[in-house]
Structures are given as C-alpha cells and as structure tokens.
Length: 559
Image (cartoon, rainbow, N blue to C red; front, side, top):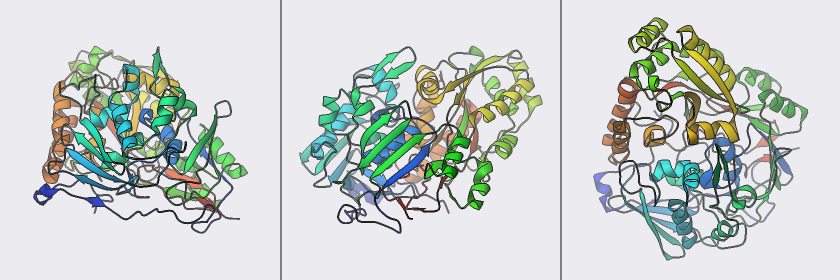
C-alpha cells in the first residue's frame, strides 16, 4: 500500500460538486500559555538550520531553507496533516469545486487577524491571488517559481502554449467566502493550494512595504522591505528580527493565533551551514535540534540519547542538463552517454543514508503516475564512450555547477556527490570544469533563473502527493534549468496534468515518465534519499514530515 494517497479524485458521481471539509482540528486550545503535550510551554526553542533563507515573502520562496521560517509565520487556505501528505483545514474550513473543477469555493475562518492587526477575510484572499498573477516585472515573475509552475503564467506573460495562465479571477461574495475561478481544470488542485508559496499575506503590509519591488542586477535579485524585514501573515509566530551578520532569525509567539497556541515564546533559527558544526552545537547544548544530520552520524547520535527522526524518502536528486548553452548536449546520445557513465549504485551506497534508492525516473514510487516497468539506466562506461563517439563528442567539455554551504534532504553532501559524478564523467573522457557556488545568492540564481550552466546538481522534495508536482515542476514549461528546445515535452506533460479522471491521469503520467527517460532524457534521475531531523531527548511535539513541512508551534521542552 502506498504511504500517501493522491489528493485530487474525480468520479462521474462528482459532477454535482465535491465538498472537502473537516472540523477544525486545531481550534484554539485554551488561554495563552496553556501547555500542549508532555512538555512545558514558554521559553525559547533554538533550531540549527543548514542554510540561510533567501527572503520571507512566501510567493518568492523557492527552497526549503526559505520555507522553514516562512511556514511558521504564515498559513495557507488548506494545510497538510502533520506527518502526512493528506489535506486538512487551514485558513479555509471547506473547499468545494464546481462540476468541471474550474472553480473552487472556499469557506474561510472567522475572526482571524494578520500580525499587523488587520482582518483576514475573502477580500484579503483575492488580493493575494490577484497580486500573484499581476506581478509587475520579469524579475518578480522569475522568482515566483512555484506560482509560475502551478498556474503556468502571469497576466502579461502568456504560457509557452500561447494559452492564458491557469488562474482567471477571484471574487468575494461575502467576508467568509472566496471563489477562485480557473481557465482550465488542473489535477494539482486542491493539493497545491496548501503550498507554502501560496500563503496569505496582509494586503496592508504588502502595500506599505513595497512587496512587489523585486529587481535583478546581474545574476542577483533584491527584494522590497516586505520580503526582507516585514513579513506579515496569520501564523503562530511573528517576525522579530533577522541578524544577517550572526545568521540568526528570531520569531516571537503570536498570542492571537487562531489555532492551538504556540508553545515557545521565541523560536530561533541559527543558520549553521556545516553539518559537523551543527552536531557540535547540539552536543554543546546551544541548540535544541538541527536538520539533515550526516547519515554516518545517525547511530552515534542515537547512542548519545538524541532523537533521530527519519522522514520518508519523498524526494528526487537529479543531474540537470542544460541544452541551451552547450550544443553537444542537445544530442540525445550525449545525454544517454552521461547517464551510462554514472555509477549511481556506488553513489547511493557511499554517499547516502540507509534506505536510499537509485532512481528510475523523476518521482518516487509513492506517487501515482510512477511507471513501475522502468529500470535504472545501467552503469556502462563502454557504452558511454561509444555513444559519445557516435555523436562526435568524444572531447566533450562541460561546466558543472554544484552548490556549497548547504545540505539538502536529497543531497547530504553536495561536494562529495559532485566529486563522485565528476570522476565518473572524466573516466569516459569528458572534461569537467567544476563551478562551486553558494546556495543562496549564487547557485540558485545561476541555475534556476539565469541558466548559465551546462550541468548541475539539484533535487526536489514533494510539496504534495501529485505527479505534476514532480515532472510538471521540472518539465511542464520551458525553464532556464534545462533549456529544453523540444516543445513536445511541455505539451505531453501539460496534457497529463490537465487530465482529471484518476485512472486516465495515472496512465498519462506513467507514459510521460517512460518518454522522459527513453525519448527525451532532459536530465538524469539519480536517487531518492530518506533525510532525518535530530532533536534533544527533552523535546516533544515535532512531527517529521515527508514533505519536510515541519511545524514548530507544538514543540515543547521538558526539564
């Protein structure tokens, strides 16, 4: 049985409209300061984060280290039940599609306030949706990575197909009802409404602090004051400060939170890029937990009395190939040669934790649309050399970008993984020019915004359980990451993503996965890896998420 179920189901009987509703599972649990669980409320919880956030505006959040503090300060219309990919109420208590799934009606919570004291209501929801589709310039649109992927374009930027974007309009017939109209049905919904990027911000704060003032200078992006110093949501914690010199983010308890009150008065994220340094800080007692302990340290940490909480491997690590910059990479035989050159079994065995697997395609097996008949591309360096020779690329040179100063769920040590792959490539005659760059302010901009690389290491942790969130995110539209020249790739992924019948949608994505591997090979899937999170023995209430969607409001410390 699969560990998570696809969240968007359509049957013939559903033509009347389906209501997904639930009682509020997190109504206010009592007066401020009331403890929940076995620990004690109050005090400060300090967590060691592997990387720095890029900004604090959800719509411009693209990576896990930005999402981590953001999801403590904001809420989405729907949320994911802790420890699962299942939906539960968030700012909306009910969400109802129309007969053809082109309109979603949300029933909103009453009495919710933004951190600035203004009201959350249907008009605020519509303001956010209309802001996103009308982002004013290419810089802002480029940084709204998730919105572009899910909604397929902006008002002044038609999709590659020439069709309008998915979002059409939002209306607020009354303060507790918001109606989102789409230009077409999309199987990503309602699951995608829970994405952290689609958190609801205070309209007043967005306007006061110039949220849309995003600029690009060279390969770097800058943001308005809202994203840097004034994030304003409805979440359990409020922003206090970000000391960029000390790399410390401080959040404070929101006493007016609509749900169960947060248990810590202060939530602090200390950015500690080096994994060994994070471990030493935990052992010294200066932090209460940290993310992505080295797989080699799991047993030691357990033996020392720490709690090592292992998440399911709901992710993918891949070797990206940019066909735009290097003409040789446009030849399928060259891309196949690169795939055959890599000893992925050895990489998984030596670089990744127990339970990691070699990937056969661009999604884990838990996701509907996984093609079970696909086999891993075999490690065959003789075949790699032959393919390079056939393509006239025996003297191939590539600029291989990889990230530094970060640990990712799918990539515990980027430098070691790069080194192993680069050596494999050199063994078949490929000249590798290494280009290491820091994760934020360098690597992500180079790869995902500017596309200046030939090859790169990157991956993805599923945001919700849907095939479009994997292959659709990578290959649904043209992206600088891959420079894919063949529009048939986008058309095939788009057609599968627009299919709403469950059986037909699953079959369509199975074929997409086969074609991506056998016909197009725009990148090389490498592995799925189970990441862990570690906390002290006196910590309770932290639930590891397959989506890395951990919430810190319920976390308590005893003693």
